[in-house]
Image 1 (tube, rainbow, N blue to C red):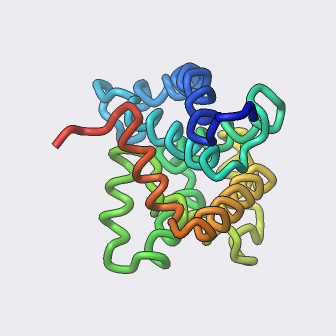
Image 2 (cartoon, rainbow, N blue to C red):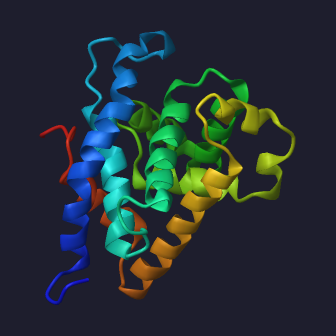
Length: 196
């Protein structure tokens, strides 16, 4: 990193290419009304949530250099797991997501799920999914893997995101912050945030 450049500066250089890549990959969300999303809905909240997640990882300094195969894999996994939880009709995928939220948030689970369906990833929904996916029984059998196969992702992609999450949590904890706080700040800076 050049002298005088901060992680936040590096994150800003990352965002424009990510924006266009995520725009192209998530464009299909608008046309997925059959899966419960109205046709007129803009994909901006979903793009913004992916961009915020990637920016949070960048703030932690855990992302590989932009344009590398590893960076592209991370972008794809972040987008595709969100898409799977939003669009998949596979029972194992929907059950995994709902159970993850319920186990983590109890009575708040429905609120977190509704927020996810409306705006994509939040720090909370992402944390719950990552924690649930680390349970040994999560990947037992082929049902979950089969459900994710439709989105060209699998356990190996999940493990990459889980590693980024764990490393980010460690960095933010050492700085006296939390993953959720950093994500929330970055999310406010991205497209698709409703003004209050």
